[in-house]
Length: 241
Image (cartoon, rainbow, N blue to C red; front, side, top):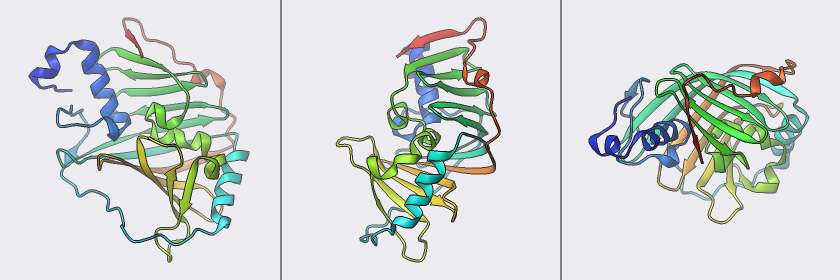
């Protein structure tokens, strides 16, 4: 990963936080960004329709909530595209996801970065920098991990105001946080008739987006708890946040 001279001067810990933050959440993006080894190219922002959204019917929301409330675990392949408005760049990352309720997640990107939530702590590990950031995990938005939304998808109406942005796409939902001051401006979900989420787009208040698509999803696979415990590789610097 390359950093500009100002970033180098701020020290090793700051560099790790910046590089991981850009991967995990576009809300951390700014003009002083770091580019990883993933392909980068220009791309337009995902448009945010200004027209009033039709009122959502309860059926699809109920289907999503019921599906994820009853879901024990899942695995999937992930493609994540982060659009950074300040520099008009899109970063693309691919990886594999494993989720187990309650509160456990493992996301491994092909560029050597790993996120592990064990129900209490969230670990953000970079193989390239040999550094790991550890934070207390309270909710998916606070941890800036878009895919972690699936851990709380069984209670959408509790935390969000829900609408349908396009009348001819009743299974595409816009979720606006009820919590005042939330970093996320909006979350757009694309679901099937059974309530399975196949794509989500996170919009932050700076105009950045994180677009995550899931494929090869397998549910009820009896995942071992051991894979949700992060084992710190030898020689890794741990940064507490």
